[in-house]
Image (cartoon, rainbow, N blue to C red; front, side, top):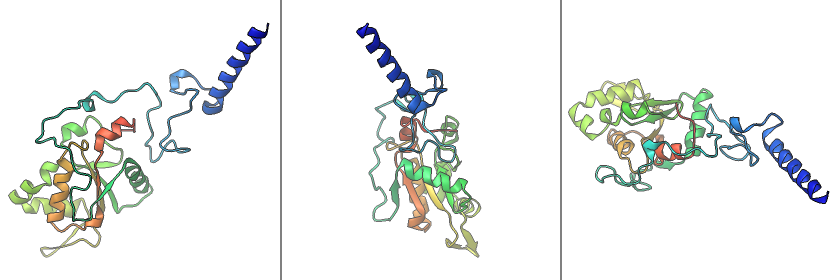
Length: 220
């Protein structure tokens, strides 16, 4: 009798624990578990449509599972590869906050996916715009500088005043590519610095899609 009571108590406690975290309608199919839902940070589940995969058995996208890539070109990027330029290296939370501010109407912010379109089709950060590094790097600048100027003016808010670039209303750019082994967004950032883009208006998300996917964050 005592053994049956203990089993019943344990079962009740387990059910209560699940309900306490997941609500009365919890079930295993919606990714809810007794340990609670998977939040971005404590108490925050969704920001600007971005959340984390609720399946705690989820694994990383196979496109980002490879551990060894030939270097060059896939060399590990330094933490601050643009020194002495004051380009800030940022985290996922910074990207999420930027996406939130953009969604709230801040037109001075732009999330820039610097990868080629084929990679973007596999998933990118919600709210980002694809400006491939092939159109914004040193080679593109040497080949056709006016094409690069067009990107700065049409996409980034730079003003072309009779051949002089005015950056007063330039957007703050949050650039990313595939991760710490990817040199695509760094190539774009170096081109921007060469063009005189304000250093404090350039942010470098070093972790890129590799870390974004690893954390189970929403892609589009």
